[in-house]
Image (tube, rainbow, N blue to C red; front, side, top):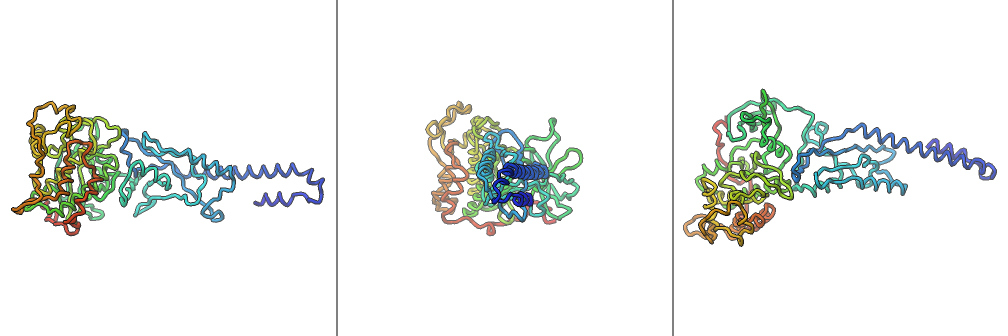
Length: 498
């Protein structure tokens, strides 16, 4: 501004025409040289700001619609505004406004990879109402490499991977190394499965009781187990009240790896085995609502669990339910790809898997939920076959033998060539009658409709988790029990109270 004042002061007197003619070209050259100098200073300042803030990794969003596991790299820059400028820069030049529109149009969202890409010079100007939203960790906002995003960018990401409102995003400190397992005191073993050993432990630093799952490496010859890698990847990416929370990954001696998770007192299978009477309908509604909310969150984020069963559903004494054991889960996409059909425990396995279908989607989880709902109501497994053929026979005897009318495409499945006894009727209503004169199990018309739609043969017409959540059964009397009023049980682990 001082240089501009100097130029103005040196302008010739209008009363002297000859002076104006002589110095006009010189003054125009000075003004143009001054404008170029100011533009160079602005560009240099913006280049310095780009170098000062490196590229950051945003790991908070899920991109399960693609088969390839790609890192989402988002280039972000802080925007500093001087007090003299105020909070908003005004775009006074039409040419500069057009330049900003052109630069904003360079940003794109790749529909194939799900990776958000931005122009390197995107943030030259901040218009009114356009601001940077920084996700901060509750403890230390400088310790987490959480991505910064604008409102428009968030809108594009949310259309790619919809998430339920109210579920906060996880912020992971990528610079802090894993803690050692010796920082936890092992209390007792809870369970041992195919892919790991789950123990109860106490954090020596905070005194918190947690569950630690040791990844089995004994039979692995090709590095880290793929099932455990998928489970860790999915659980660290998700955060939902109905999905078990993984707090961190810790390491032990050699190549031993542990997943540290929140501790839950019970699993649903063990609780039901100790109960003398089955859950009431209001209690079943409370559990099914939480279960459907968790499954909907998974499906919205392009993940199929593929092993939903009562032993993989955890409970605590506050009436909370959480889904665990994601060893068989995987991301899926559209169009569907062939997957292995050797998934889901036999009693909860969908008929399309039993008949050899290799292309399947979220409908297999909904069949498992139908089996779980029936088991919650009756306290007994609905289909308890010993082998695949026996399981199919029990399903067909209860729901009727399928055909092309009930299940379009049934005859093309590999297992449909086998000869099954013809049973044309659906006898599920006999198992769950509307009225009982002996005080036995009953189920209303709305409840039976929900159960029957979960156990529909055709995967294309089987009810989705979202539609099930909005079903009228949850709105009729008796209403779902509140979580605080759910029954509590003594901890099934002998040393829990120690």
